[in-house]
Length: 80
Length: 225
Image: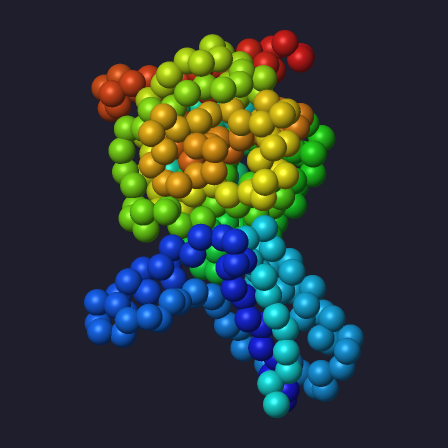
């Protein structure tokens, strides 16, 4: 079974309050100079071969449900 | 005839009974609608109440948006049926693209629960015509993800078309242009983060500024019938 990864990240121009909170906590823990943006990773098991068609379906799924493209970008890739 | 207003319950909805109560106290008949049924039961209008539909999994409102009842609601709203989305209901309307933009985590990163001052910016919507433009009202706000955001072009369009219906006085959550509530171009769909259904009973709330939301709808329906 093949695995497709969808990464969803807040768009660069969008404030990322969660990333900001994590960045602050890292600083307090003694890890300065680390600036975090927090996103989501979806691991999707795909039945059968990952054809171009299947990948296009996953992209459509990401566009419709996994990401809100008003505020997020997404990236689809096949895990080697 | 009494106005029949549907109130949708999703798994995780909290404020459906308060919304139904507000409908009743303001003279209309509440009709319970279940998320899993693809019928609106012939109602005159629908309220999407507050809460945490589907546990806010994925994104607030993202999964509720694809429930069976929403398929019917989206069709009806596009045909002009009045829809009011309160808090999580606003998030569902944004996810369904019935309203532009998105709601993000509050800039303060904290959940906010307070009596919030708002200014009425437009009475040109089904749910706000009983107010005066510029009127200051106080409505309960209780949300963690109420930070309204849209791209610059969308914000400009909302301002130019008079689609910003309510603005915060003292922006609590970082919302763009202090936006608390908006309407679609047609004026039949309104979404806002504050909770008018909690402000209808003088015994239970400091103001009854939520009442005109519901009377606006009734007088609109009387005019068009």
